[in-house]
Length: 261
Image (tube, rainbow, N blue to C red):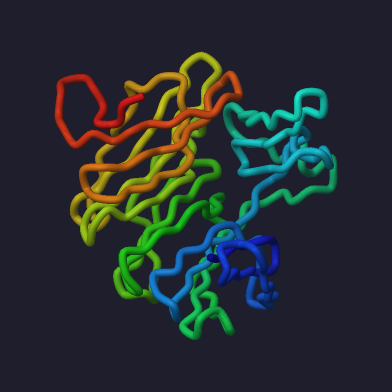
C-alpha cells in the first residue's frame, strides 16, 4: 500500500497499521497519486496549481484545483467544495501561493528506493491527478488545469498527450485500466448551472477516446474501480457537497450512459 504526500512517498506492508516514509529529491512539485503495477515498478504522478483564496484556509485541504475538502466542526462533516470556472492566478499572486501549474511523472524500478523523473513541465498549464497502469509499461494519467488532458505511456518511459479538451469548466481526476486496451478516465463539468459527469473511455489502449456519462447530472465522478470489464464503480461528489456511488453496467441504450446512479 502506497501513499504520496508533498515531497515524499509512504509505504505500508500491514494494511495501513504502520508506515515508512521516504523523501524523493527528484520531485519538483507535490506528489499526488501512485500506481504500482508490480513490486518493483512504481509511478508517481505529481503537480501543483495556482492556489485559490478559498483553498488557503489552514482548516481546509485542497484535493485539487477544482475541489477543496473543508471540515465542519459543529457537525464533524467534511464537505467537498467545488471551484467553478477557470482557476484564477490573481488570488494566488495576492496571497503568496503558487501562481503556475506544474506536472511531473516519476518512476521507480527498485521498489521505491530510487526514482527517476520521466516527464516535467511548468509551461503546459496542467497538473497530474490519478495515474493507473495495466502492467509495468502501459499506464495513463488524468491531467487538468486551464484545460483537461490524458497522458499515456506504452513503453514505460515516454509520456505522450493522447487527449485534450480546452474547456475551462471540465475537470478530470480518476483513472482506471479494465484490460490491456480498455481505460476509463473520470471527471465532470463543473458549472453552477450545468454540472454533470464527464467520463472518457478508450478501448484501443488510449489511441482514441469517447465521452460518456454526460447524462448523469449533478454528479462528479472522482475515482474508479473495476473488478472486471462488466463490473465497476465510481465514487462521486455533488453540488450539495454529498458523496455518491455510480455502478457500471456494460450495456448500450440510446441517450443513457453505461454508468447508473
